[in-house]
Length: 267
Ligand SMILES: C[S@@+](CC[C@H](N)C(=O)[O-])C[C@H]1O[C@@H](n2cnc3c(N)ncnc32)[C@H](O)[C@@H]1O
Image 1 (cartoon, protein in one colour):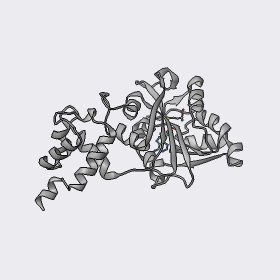
Image 2 (cartoon, protein in one colour):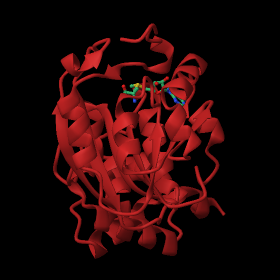
Image 3 (cartoon, helix red, strand yellow):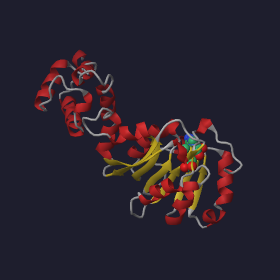
Image 4 (cartoon, helix red, strand yellow):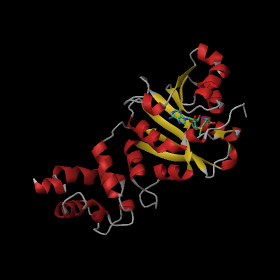
């Protein structure tokens, strides 16, 4: 590895396995979108990306920024690569860049979920192809009935389709992480993103093993919930992971139209 010590605080595990790097590039959607890479690190994935598309890369570590500026002098001069040095979360307003892009990255795991949620909400982001902790990838890709089906799966299914691309063992990285990783792809079909819907999901999954009715009744009036459950033919004993994404949207619409929050009852 270059003369660089990996910094734990920035989640630095550099992907060294060329087969996995190629699999990421092969899974990229075929379109004219720009690429955004978050955390280019030593530039191993960047090298493949700039060969096929123009890339905007965001890197927080100033040592790595300097190294990348040297390594990719030519690509920076031809504008095939732009390096933004700094914390991507600070740079990210509602849109990260002002043109359509696909996010392709081996993400820093300590902020991976946050980054994916921001990309799902960003109207300029069209597709998300990222490496994260396996456990997190499974949550984003889960389907109704799966044990890990939850708020992240529903938010993803509301925006598009997700699929696991490849599982990656710790040996693919330097230094090696303690956990397995996975690359997954979300192809976005809609920019629909509703913070209130997300809040309802948080309530629905507060205690995943309890019934959905029990969780929701912390916020919604019980009689309204009973009416809504009946309309949607949902059993009162159903658990949150057993309800499909469409039914969650119906549930949200109906509870809103009936103004079923407990607060509203006190008015
Ligand atoms: C898991 S490493 C991936 C490095 C490289 N892409 C690879 O595959 O080898 C995560 C990268 O994200 C960078 N990073 C961590 N936090 C960041 C942040 N808030 N903004 C931008 N980059 C960040 C790290 O410095 C590191 O380069």
